[in-house]
Length: 173
Image (cartoon, rainbow, N blue to C red):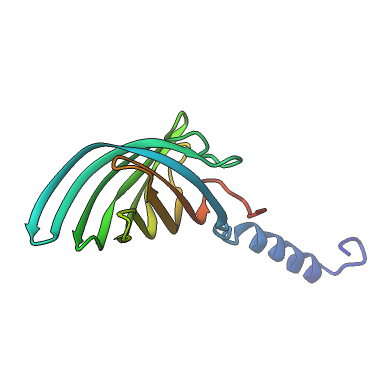
């Protein structure tokens, strides 16, 4: 207790503690689980044969994200990617961009695409947020994704990960 009965040394110790607490660095925001699902359509595709049963495909796609309760719910999504398939299997890498009225995020991703005996194409891998703009400037995050083609030009997928939003104080999810 600080008061008349507290010696001056006690007051200085209390004052020093208050100053130290005020000057202590603020811990970084905690990452929170976040995810969504998306649908997309191939807008442009450029296949380049590399050899027998091997092709490199550069493509762009666009679609929509659904993530109720997240800042990316209803975001427009754009993909730019390259997939190299040998006998229907191979690496995929690219960039995905989520755009909302208040800001946008871009993430680099990489993974593996596979084709099953029935010709269905799927892919899974990891992503890392590389940029945020507007209200999403400073966003950080990483996670996993999966996608399955529903036709030669349409696909649906999911993403899940840990995201730290700008100005986020704590994780409640």
